[in-house]
Amino acid sequence: CPLTITAGSFTGLRISLFPNPTDKNANVKVATSFTISELQGATITVSDIYGRVIRQITNVSPNTTIQAPAATGMYVVTLTLQNGVKYSANLLTN
Image 1 (cartoon, rainbow, N blue to C red):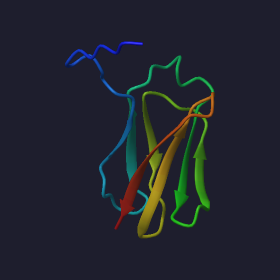
Image 2 (image 1 turned 90 degrees about the vertical axis):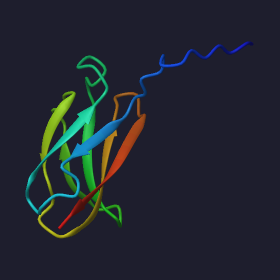
Image 3 (image 1 turned 60 degrees about the vertical axis):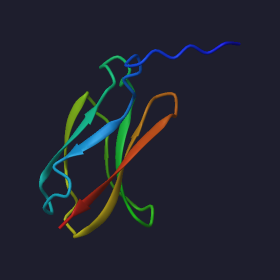
């Protein structure tokens, strides 16, 4: 089937973290390009580099504030939609 691509038509679905890097225990904004209805049943999980879950948030909105982990290091913040699709970003705490 033919594929037509129009410049500027794809906005991309993603998550971003701000501020990043951040201080330990600081508030971090998880911004998504999803609507509230698309985030129904979604979760945000904060895991360390070994895969251990540090925190899980079930009340997800397009701009969710989470607390950074209490230890210095690299963490993975994963948004999991209700259908199982995952999006992730790295978070550095110092």
